[in-house]
Image 1 (cartoon, one colour):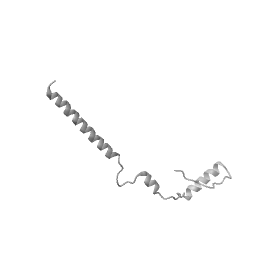
Image 2: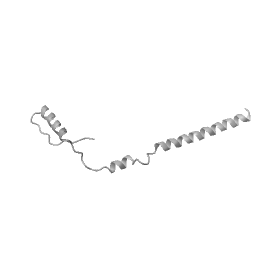
Image 3: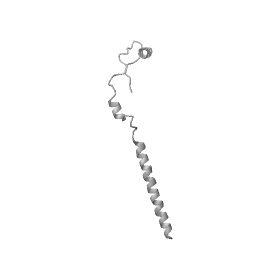
Image 4: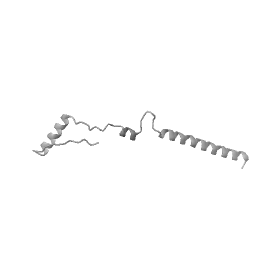
Length: 82
């Protein structure tokens, strides 16, 4: 092989290494959360500890459905699952 072939192989390997390093850096930068958004764990911890209220119309509809399927039954508590 000629001497220029070795130089070409070495230069190609160097370009490939630099390209892979740039792509790895871009991937690392894209995996970071945006600075104006708080992390999900902090947002959940900062959420108020209040229970959601249920609309009166929904409560009446649930009570009517329970009464239609089981006459004489009473709805004592309605909980919303998340």
